[in-house]
Length: 289
Image 1: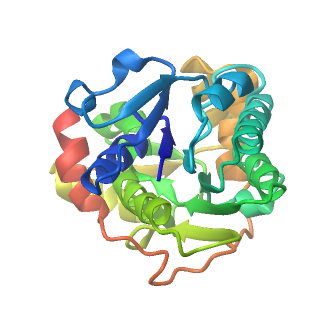
Image 2: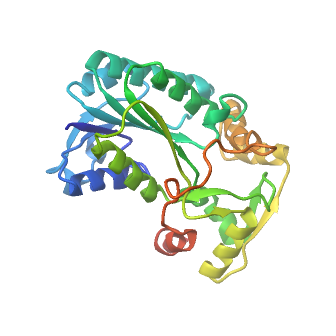
C-alpha cells in the first residue's frame, strides 16, 4: 500500500511519518521543499515536491498512491477561504485523476457548522469536496491543538493569556502526536469504508482557566487567562502582521464556536486520546520558554 502524507514537517505530519515508517511503510512525503525532509528519514521515505494549493503538482506527485493524508496549508494572504478552495480543488483533482481510493483528512471540531466559523469554514469546504467523490474518506474533527500555545509563548512568559472565549467554557484540547497515531491507524486499516467522521478530543475537555492553572503548576510561575474583546484580539492579530482578512478568519474560529455551539461528535472512547496537557507542556513547551 502506497501512502502519501502532506505537510510532513507539520505538528501532525512529522510524527505521522515516523509512525508509518515504524509500521514498515515507505510513505511518500509531499512537500514544497524536499531539502526539509529529515536527513535521518531519507532512506525510509520517498519525497516529491508539490504545493498543496496547486492541483497539477499534487496530481502529478500522487500517481499510484493508494491512500492519502491530506492537510490544507495554513493560509497567509488576503483570501484565506479562497486558499482552502484551491486546496479542495487540488485534492479532488488528485483523487479523481489517480484513482486514490482512501483519504484521511485533517479537519477540525466546528467544520460540521459549515458556515460562520472563520477559517474552519475552509476545512468544511474540503470536507464537502471529498464527500462528493466516490471514495472512502474519514474526516478527523480535531480539538484545539496543544501547540497553539506556542503562538502565545510571549504572553505566557508575561503571565497573562488573552482569549476571547468564556474562561469557564470547556473544549477539547489535543496533542498533535495523538492525532498522528489516530491517522496512522486509519491509513493502515483497510477494513473501514464509506464516509466517516472521527473526532480526536484529547484526554479531557479543558477551560481556559484550567489551562492557566496547569501552566502555573508546570512552569512554577503564575499564569492567568484574561478575557478580552473581539476588537482587541483582532487588533493584536493585525499587530502581529496578519492581513486583515486572515485576522478576521482566525478570530472567527473562536467567535463562531463561542455561543451555543455543540460539537457533532460527543466524547467517547473512540475520540479520547491519551496525552495530557501537563505532559506535553513538560516535554515540548517548557524547554522552549
